[in-house]
Structure formats: C-alpha cells, structure tokens
Length: 252
Length: 213
Image (tube, rainbow over all chains, first blue to last red; front, side, top):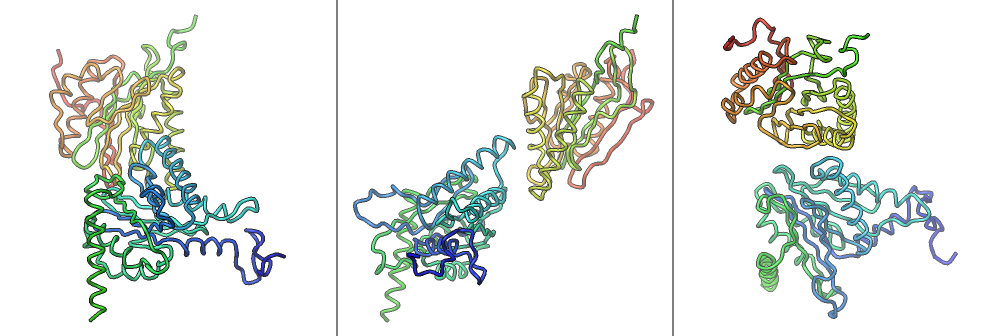
C-alpha cells in the first residue's frame, strides 16, 4: 500500500468502518482548497460571485471564468477543480436544453438542481469514476422569485437564501448572514457580494485573484448575465473601499 | 349494401371554443358526433379533462382525439408526480402539439388546450390540423366555427368577467349549432380558474335565442 491511509480510500464506493466514504471526503477537500464562491438571493434577483484565484500573471484576464451560463435564465458558479466544473456545466446545459425541447418552456431551477445532484451522486458510486472535485451554486430568477441551489460533490443539494463554498466559506457565510436579504436589491447585492469576496480573500496565501460576478434579476428580465464593464468596476471599487475603511479602523 | 354512415369515419363535426377572461378561461362545445349525415351521439362530451386545471376541446376524428388526450393525460400525471406541482398549461399544450405534429400524416385531430396555472393564469392554446401551436386570447374550431368568426371578432373583449365570458361562449356556440349541420344538441361549458373547474350544460331548449329566419 503506497499511501499512509487505512486502505479504505482505494475505491470510491468503499466504506470505512466509521461509515465514511473517503474518496468523497477528498473531493470535498478539493473544493475547500479552492477560491470562494458566493451566492446571494436578493429581493429582486440572485447574485453569484467567485474569488477566481490566478496562479500566474501570464494568464490573460477572464480566460478561466468560474461563472457559467447554463441556460438563458440559469447561472452557475463553481468552486473546486475547474475542468470538473466545466464537465458539470456541460451536463447541466444539456439537461436544460433537453428540458426546453421536451417541455416547451424553460427548466425550473429545482428540476435542474435535482438532475445535477443526481449526476454528482452517481459519480460517487462506481469504481471506474471519481467524484467531482467541485461544488456548484445554481441561480435563477423565476417568475419573480429568486432561487439559489448549492450542490456538493457528494450529491447533497439544498435550496438557500445565501450560500458560500470554497476556502473561506465560513467567513463568507457569516458575512452573508449579516445582510438583510429581503430588503437588498440585486444591484446592491452585486456590490455586497463583491465586498464579501474581497474581505474573504487571503492576500498572504494567494496574491492575485479575479472577481467573477454574475446576476439574474428583474432588471435583466430574468436573464443570467455576467457582470462586466461599469457595473463590475463599481462593485469592485465599492469592495476595495469598504476593505480599506475596515483596515484603517484596525489601525485605530 | 351497407348504409353509407357505416363506411365513414366517426367525426366530431363540431363547434368548440375557448376564451381567456380576467381570472381564467371559459371553454365551450356542442355535443354532436356524426358519421356522415348520421348522428352517432347527440350528447357527446368534447370537453375532455387533462388535469384538474387543464382541459382540451376536441375536434376531428373522435378516435384519434380520445387516444391522444389519454396519452397527454398520462404525461401530465407523470409530470405532476416527478415535479411535485401541477403541470403548466403551456406544457400540456406542448405535449399535445408534439404528438399531433410528429404524427401529422396519420392523424385527423385539431384541439384547443385551455386551463389555468399558478404562473400564467388562464391560457388558451390552439392546435389546428398540422400541429401548429399558438397561444390566443380566444380560439374556436370545428366545422361550426366557420359560421361564427364574424360574431366572435365583433363581440370579443379582452379581460371580460366570468359571467360575461360564459354568456359570450354560450351565445357563440348556439349560433354555430343553428347554422352548422354537423353541430347540434346541447351546449357544454366549463369555467376553469384558481379554484378548479366548474361545468355547465345548457339544454337545447334553453340555448340563447337568435334570428330564426
């Protein structure tokens, strides 16, 4: 046995005597060591934000986005292994397109979350595959109601008012809890989400990161859009300003 | 030598219609089923339930439309169980349309799907012979409809009340029953809204009166 493990982690579907599936737990670890992804349900929309850690200055900006379009009305943010997240996104897109074809209307997010969760769970059960090393947040603004789902590598999924996955998930969740989500507008939600990502970013461990933002709201007529340009700059500046203010408070 | 009606397909030579009002839909139909000139059934129910909130009005081959309605009902029942909520009217219309379109060379069926759902309220979808699907605030079909289009166009108002709408449908179907040889019998009505379906029959002698000349 090459590893120092107890030997219960050689097969995805093998239980340890404690009832744990080690491969699935390792997959969770892959998510926990990745940039934080945040999802917030606001009064009139849903915001997704990701701390997209950049490992080299040689990358072009925005070449490895961690927010994805799944359908016109559904967005996805991912934390964990990027190629795995892309595979999940591809699958989710196919599901959403199939649903449109067979139902003649956009896929409800609850349905998509269930399908994505089925896929991720299936990958914890067979020896020929490994669990997905990513967690995803799915967002939509359906019939005037903001919806957010989080799916984990084990296949567990819940519907949330606000959620965070990845490195600084604990901090981020605490920050989300402080927001008054029922009153927050999506436009301000974008800024708050950006602020949370900036405040959770660890400058010592990860020097550079890109802020990936996306939004689906009443203003975007229920369509999922990647936040760019002026709105992005505004959110990013707001986050930086809030952070500096916070730091100067510390000095006193 | 057999009588000619034994050789002819059983058709719902029909008048059917559906109208959206402010809160739901009203659907109506005559009750005649004929085979050539022979009236096979004078009390046919052409308003067929697909779910508790969605109905279809059938015209064309009685056999085809019954079989298709059964099929669509199966799909919608399945959808209710798997999604845990009532299917939307749009989905019902879409399932109906796919069946009609995919089998358009072998079917003789034109239907109106109408009902109510939580998302979009009362809706009327018209699916004529080839399998086209269009949402309309008002739709009419069957041989009888050709005699009343002028009346429908003149009298239809968007956003009618429940009672106004029932009167409009009853009057229109009655006019068609009078002029169309293949429509007749009683006028069946159904009102579909948030609280479900309410059905009515207007017996032949009680049909709204009009010029008898």
